[in-house]
Amino acid sequence: MISVDSPLGDDWSEWRLHDLVSHPLTYGIVKTGPSVPGGVPAVRVTDVRDGFIDTSDLLCVSPEVAGQYARSTLKTDDVLLTIQGNLRRSAVVPSELEGANITRSVAVLRFSDAELARWVQINFESPRLQAEFARKSSGSTRAALNLKDLATVAVMLPPAREFSRRLTALENARDLRDAALSEVAKATSHVDAAQSSAVRTLYNGASTASSSTQPLGEVASSSLGKMLDQAKNRGTPRPYLRNANVQWRRFVLDDIQHMRITDEEADRFRVLANDVLICEGGAPGRAAVWTGEGEVYFQKALHRVRCSSDLSPSWLVLALQAMTAQGTLAPYLTGTGILHLTGSSLAKLPLLIPSIAEQSARVAIIDEVFTKSEQTLRLLSATADSAGLAYQALLARHTSPPQLHTDKIEATNRSVRVITGQENPLEYPRFSARGSAEAAYSDADGIDLGSALTALGGTATAAELLAACGAASVDAFYVALRHAVARGELIESAASNQSRTLSVSP
Image 1 (cartoon, helix red, strand yellow):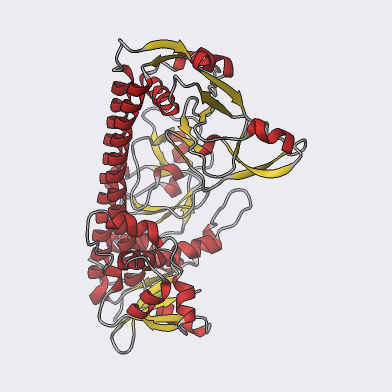
Image 2: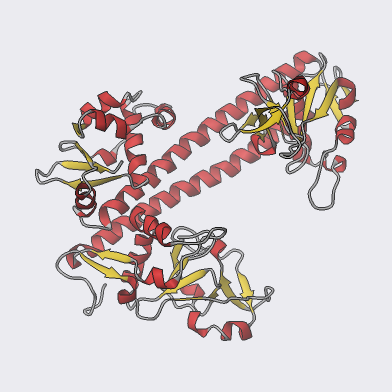
């Protein structure tokens, strides 16, 4: 429990961090030196996660180095905050790290009470304080938050009668989120192993009676893409694929870049339907089949392979994935640091090639395996997403008084409000059937609540907003609503008539 001398009162109060801490804010060791077995653990930025410290790979410094930074020696229930590089992650120090230290990129805050420390740390994860940290950070190449600015950050403390209830609600919600994320991580690991096993089994189990082993160069042709050279390239800017766009069995097309290609070069570097794109470096051998949507070209970091009638493009991808998984591709890679799959090595790659009919049958099986397992992962991820959004909504609700954000937004005369009656919009989505969650999360991306509210004059019931925003389903509407809450664009508060009010800042 909070001590008698606590800063809690009968109402909400605002406190600067420098007035809440029991010791001056400080950072840790500037030059750690090499890790020393059996030395003093030093927590780095990479060790601090959202709400906990990963102790699996802690750097250890010599006692002499740690002794020079006695000011940052850790005590149980200290709060850590990353202040350089990957900013704004925080955690409470567990008892097993008593006596450890921190590095220069981590700040330590000490409080006189463990519950107060937990409240401040969980506030650090709130949309309001995350935005505040972002505003106060500086640096053109490496973002940093200095201690002087950090000390002035304001934390809201609830009334004493509500403190424990609010803290418990937030910690329970975070536990649910973390449990959901843990399940996704476990499931992903199992799915990866199952997919890898299926790929190896289906490739190596091809019928020997109808199969032959041939070098890829005898059943396909390959070429490297265009060299990216901003100074020398001429022609019209055209979209092109690079390593990052090619993943196993699929393409990531949300960050397509452009380079100049002349009309004379276009046919040479154009990617056509059924072309196989294979990574030459980075993740050599990783491949996917282009299905032919739109005009696109390819960079020199990729091989484009065109298969003969004896080789299915999808079978080639299956073969490369199997060979990568079982290590038989490794002898064909060159390089001591970054490995490469050269054109000559690719041409020599021995492929097990059954009949086209058997290739197609086995590819169909692996397609079904991947489709079903990825659907399962998407549903689990949707559940974790929902838990994360619920946690963010609770953070917004429990870490500041109900009227705080509404008052500030309305003072700018830029607010829009949704009156939702007695329902609680943040309890949604309640998915009606299996698969509706996946569809809702996909459809929510295209919903523009701000424009719909503006068109309605700034005030609307939930039903009116749902009708105006063009959502494909009620589920998708509420997913979009909760995404807005998680981004800090929408804050729930209680209006004077006790209905739920959602204030959205455009």
